[in-house]
Length: 614
Image (cartoon, rainbow, N blue to C red; front, side, top):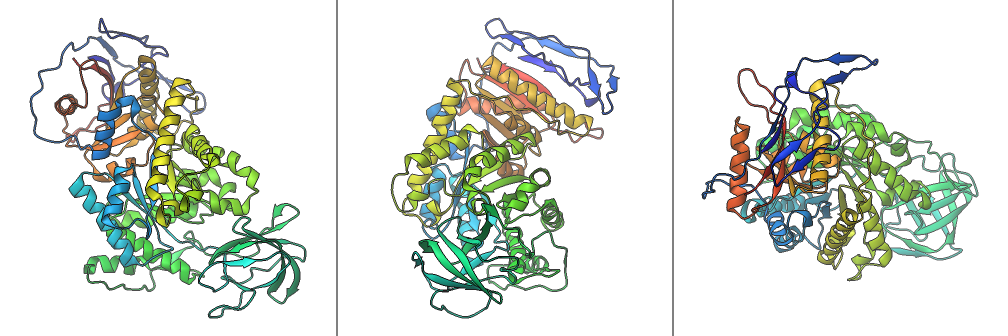
């Protein structure tokens, strides 16, 4: 065993490992210069610490003979199969999110998606009933418990969208030169050549000659006349008008600033009254959760009230992620996280969807406040020029990596596969670019929810991401990320530096895997941020941590029992891995830990070890 001893927090240097450590696996010698520790504080001051740092240049030549042990490594069946078939470096690191819809909601379909590599199941609360969503969630949990999968559940709130609707049950064709009326008038059914906006003041500030764009370019109109609050428009680019289509106004190649406000979850809410939802499957406590969640916001709309009821539903069903739609600023995220901290016994992660010009303008504060980001390129493309989408996507991905937040690339990845069994080559190139940018996850929307070839679409994502990851390693395209120091306390800064050094060591030494022992997932997240070549296996005794880490790049979360004795934890998990054939003779594993013992005077056992299996 080669070990750089970190010890207690009070005796840890943030510069323990040298830049180019050398390790001779044959002779079991680890060599690294260790500088006197200096902690840099704000204002340029340096604090010298009295420390004792030991470097053991000893290799454990052979582990004790493995015996069949009781217990489990907590491997999900898909990761275990992948590891057996492809080895450590062949494991896919990019996570896959599938939207569940009528095309894939049966138990058999969900099992097929899980077997195909689905890490997170997304439920879009815009569609279907809560009874339908509840049935899907419970099917996924049943598969996890009975079949050994590890699929997390995400609900996606509807939000207050700016949409128009022609009232017909299916799409309508807008012909070139045809005249259409757009109105905020509320009416039942449909009228010929009339489209209804779902919000007041939609035409305020709009001028004759402005362009009206439907769904980012599905059809385009020119405003030829204003009649009160109505707009008379001429179709200039023919196309389809879908039910509940999104619209935007453009003038001289720029998005027209809106003069109206739609409520968001950032509005202040008060528990004045709620809607109690009765269902035979819910207990009184679950029903009261809906009651608490169905809040009135100042100037709250019906859609907004629905969002809070949906959130209460998510809390009752124990979902792992809540994705917030149309986030305008960090306050929206903070309000929801504060609410969840008081209403949920488990840790539910909040993802902010970047899908508007406003969210781009406040990108960093939204990323900092959230637990992760979804790049909703479809809605975003309605508000910014199409040619800006690639650079904006890369910027968002980079900011998320710098701030150590997982990022999902969503919308239209394999859009053609809703109808066709093979993607276009341009779509495959788009997926490959997202993987090259080191996005944490890729998401299927309509491809899986309503498409005829959802399983094939998932297979395309899996194969393309795996191939791109291998190519990146072969071409040594691991790009250096300018690390922002995220930790504010000395303890957090030390953990961050340990993980930065650990990944550099793992890449330089060519170890087969990284094992991290963690309760809340912080160090596993720090390791993932660095995008190491070896896969990361995160051992935790918290199920909520396991499900949250399901979205982190390159992390395979494992649920195990952890004791205060870290050496015993490491030995037991390696013995179990040997017994199950997960590791073999000659494999090298880099081990990192941040487990906090539950003694009267707790200390953090933070260490970097390199173990060779013999």
